[in-house]
Amino acid sequence: MDNSPRHYFERADPGKVQSIKRESKIIDYERRKKIMQRQTTMAKPAEVKRAWYLVDATDIPLGRLASQVAQILMGKNKAIYTPNEDTGDYVVVINASKVKLTGDAEHKKNYYNVSEYNGGLRTRSSGVMLREFPEELVARCVWGMLPKGPLGRQMAKKLFVYKDEKHEQEAQKPVKLELKK
Picture 1: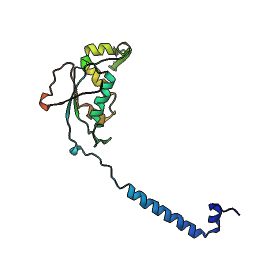
Picture 2: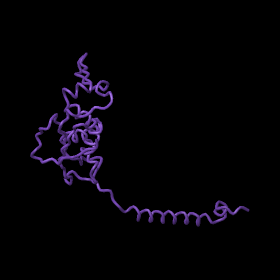
Picture 3: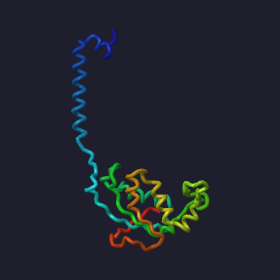
Picture 4: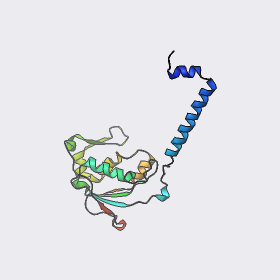
């Protein structure tokens, strides 16, 4: 006769086996309950404290600038980050015309606008956008890295982009932020 647990349970009283299983589940539940007593805190809009940051885009690659600015706008740099709330800070980007395009992006990357009329497709390369519309180039790149929908639009409203050193947010006293190059 085999002494494996299966044979032991076959010989044991079925009611006793059920009570053993039930007791072990209760013990496991109590142990897990003690371990998992911490609560996840969800940020409320009234509790969020917003700061103002000033970012100089001179010689920073466009994608790297956009990803770091998007994280600040979403609030991922804070301990109170909540995915369904806007916990981010305000960001002022200056010197957008001096942002760096790496590789062959200046000629190969295109931006499209459609007027919804026949033949209303307008195509511009990154080089043209950088020379003529640097604010739009940076803002569109950051928008591409934010969540889409009402929450993302609310986050994008906290971004202010200027092509040179002058900006209108002097009264908010933005803190200068150094980004990785």
